[in-house]
Length: 355
Image (cartoon, rainbow, N blue to C red; front, top):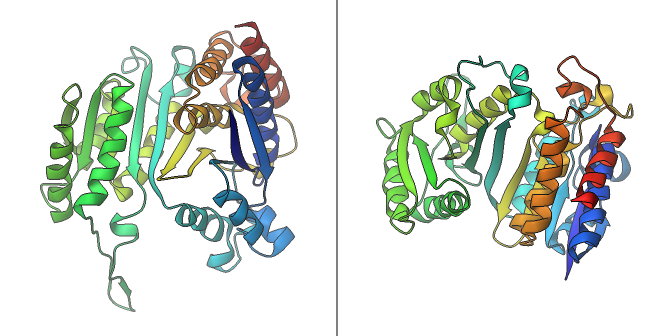
C-alpha cells in the first residue's frame, strides 16, 4: 500500500525535526510493509521568502493531491511585521486549514512519571501518568461566526453553531474515546450561552450512539480549574473552538514541554498533522531541538489517516522507552545529561528496528 504525503517542513526548527521524523517513517515503512510517496512544499516564512506568499500555489496543489499533510512548525520574528494576510500564521496555517476544510483539532496531553518535575503541578496531584486528549471544534464558533463588527467605541462577535457542526465534532471525540478509556467530558457554558445549550443537547444525542462511552459535562470555568487540580480525571475533552483554544494550551502548559506534544487536525478527506510547539528560531540549526512532538505527530498520521496502527504503536513504544530510559533532549533532561536532535532520531530508529 502506498500513501501520498505532503511534507511541509516549515520554519525555524521545523526542517531539522521533520528530518528525524522522516527517518523514523522510513524505518516503519520497511518494518511494517507499506510505502509513502513524499512531496515536499514550502509554507510559512519559507514560502514567503521563496515565493512571496506563506502558502504558495504549488504548495496548495501538493496538499490537495495528498492523502495527508505532514507539517512542521512555522513562523518567527522575521515575518511578524508583514501584512496580516502574508504572515505565516494567518496567510499560511489558517489558510491551509480553510483549504483542507479541517473541522477538528486533536491535542494529546501526556505527563510521563519520569518527567513529573517538568510539570508546574505538584507531585500531590500527579499521582499517576496523565494521559488525555482535547478535541477542539475548529471551523465554526465565535472565530468564524457572522456578523462581526469593530468600530471606535463598540465591537461584537457572533458565536454560532448548527446542529450538524456539533454532531460532526462530537462523533470525532466519541470515536477517539472508543479507542481509549471510553470517557468523554464535554466542556461548554450552557448555564449562560445559547450556543452552549444547543451544544450540550446535541452532544447528549450523539452519546446515545455510543452506549459504551460515559459522558459528563463541565462548564468551561470549572474545567480550566479542574485541569490544574485533577487532570487525571480526563480521558477525552470535547469542546468548542474558543474554549478548546484556551484549554488545549493550558493542557500543554501542565505537561512542561511543547516538544513532547503532537497534534492532528481532521478534515473530511485530508487531515493535517503537526507538533504543538512553535518554530523556536533561537535554537534552529543547533541540533538541540526535541523531535518527539513531530515524531508522535507522525504516529497520529499513520494511525488516523492510514490505519497503520502497528507502526504507530511501535513509534510510541520507542518514545516511551527513550524517555523512561533517560535518553532525552535538553528541554526534558531535568538537569541531567542531554542528547541532540539527531541522536534522538538515531535512538528511536534503533528501538523500532529491535522491537
